[in-house]
Length: 387
Ligand code: GLT
Ligand code: MN
Ligand code: MN
Image (cartoon, rainbow, N blue to C red; front, top):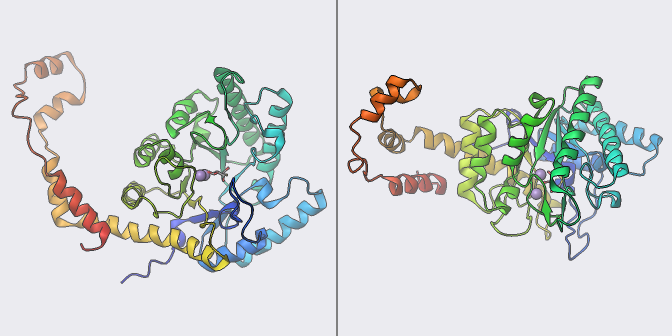
């Protein structure tokens, strides 16, 4: 029996805001004692994580003096070293402060947009001090409750201008960040711009430095929109734009839950892990989730361990699926090849088109029964642990 312990090569990471979440929700306040970044690093070291990510203000309070900042940075660097943790990703909090209540890069107010740029440049400086190479953009307040309040076309233009500016800053400073955009359909705004990962995949080619930019899809965010997350990730992978991923779980059609990875939709989690492993995804596997509000500090560790353990178990199940003789025989059976026809349809030519137009394709004979119930049941049996 494998032990399913987290392995460094899996690059399992957590945000300071995840295991540090004190359990507040819109209807009730904090239920767990707030723990410092150093305490969080100790916790992550104890559970065997590979790294930790942060927003500028998860680490350095927004009103800290320069001397306080330097002390915090020094203490945190030591805690990282003590716990063998790295910082692969950093990001900016452009959503908590009241200044951002109507957006940051897309705000109607040029002064707010300038402040958002200033805050992001400083946060990029901070992340670079810790060696972060991925920079996430989650537009928490970029959106509206009413379209009377903001022009949605202008919003896209403002967002593009901000990213183009920051790409140049990245080059100018030699930071070598890759930018990763994270979509969400709603919460905290009634309607958020760039609602799904596909929105960003369409937006990236319009930037001055598209090669610098990719996506950071989150399970819960696509499930909130009722979408198949695996397909969103596949689109990002195929476009070579999967720079980072936020793993968690979420019941469809509910508020943003950020549950422990694999705890709500195990079948989707299985196909997600299989996709990432089959295609050799090599970035961080970041758990952007938090423990149940009822959890105490020991249970928060169970939460963190559970995220990683579930991933390791599903990875093993995916390998089992790939080598299961009966499953692979079915995969072979359902993928019908015809070398002659494949050659014709591979590349257009007038002669290939003519041959295809003349091909004796019998639509009635093409209606063959497919063993998909059997294949899915075998898959479920792998997941349920009886194969
Ligand atoms: C916030 C949000 C997450 C984002 C984080 C990055 S912050 O917790 O819910 O999905 O990934 O800004
Ligand atoms: Mn996220
Ligand atoms: Mn979320």
